[in-house]
Image: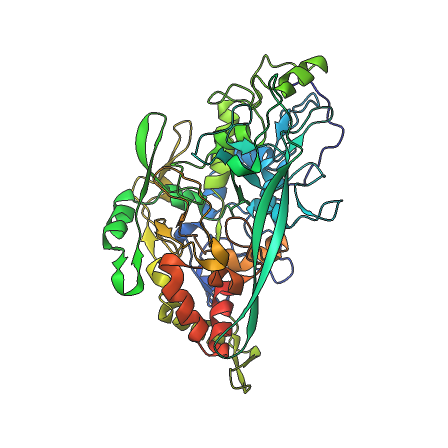
Length: 511
């Protein structure tokens, strides 16, 4: 155990039973007496659907967790481990010596996306690595031939406990480009450029990676919405989608990512490039937080300067920081999170939208959301953001073998096919191509992002940064970054009347 007392620990409160907050609606079960309330909602994930629109919309146990006492106790324990700063009962840190986040919750506040570190304003006036004990982003660095840099690994750890040298810091410079829709409405896109500063110098020659030999790509946290349902997906259905996902008239052809983990070749589902076959709880504790465990027993800075610094400070590395049972409780917590129901909109609230010709249309919120759904289909978004999938009969299995059959046999609406698609390299010179290979996924290929819960991100996490590195500051920018297989849908969106574009955004906000 790392024997180092915490100087500052952000201990976040837990909330397991939450009453109505803001415009939040909590409904337990699907009893007939709730029929009038449920009329305003659409089921997203079968029995795992929850009905809360507040800042805790992602961070609720689903119905089958709460109805089983043993599961609920483990779920609460997993929630505690997920939320707390990584400190053991003696007050010693279990994270570090270097890390990216000091707890799961530091990057995934309320099981969502902590504000993008790529837009974090630093003390020197630039953007990038935080100076407050977390970054809320993962910085991947490789040589241009794809080989990792010795002594740095695949992830640059830009945070460290007091007295330890970080591996480096990320600086982000933004380039802005204006454009306009065919009807004259203006928009702006922002492209990040990454530089690593403050490299620590390992080895006798003091060599550090140089910009001309470096590829760098950044990931901001994913929402942990629907993780259990994703793990319970029927792989045969996903593979069948890959065979059917060939729409040459729109340039679309999705494919599966297959990866080998624990010696087994499996269908990848998890991660921005579907590069994992599980929820990466063990990897997250190790790589993101520096918390040793049975699967990754070595410190992430093993053999580096930071290990020597820690030993000089009295750190001990003789015990694992977290047990497999504890990690499985975290895995259960993530599998057991509810999925927010889709909000259909009010039948009485009047909203006004402006058309391309300047005229103003007035309709109910329900009508605007419904119109936006029509536009979603008209733009062919559904060809990749597939609306309906199914979970396999046996449900899912946790990392230590616990079966979750109650996740099985469900009809769900994640708005994703979980396949890889070429997202293009042409926008602002580079597009979304990050030159980072993950399994079979090339640099320009990305897994279709599940959209369920996306409309509540601003309420849960206070921002609307989207895409893998947070470069999109709102829904419109996220759509306009679609190139490659997304180019046809982007062009259809751009050609829409301004009122229809507004309706489509309103539909996304309803998910």
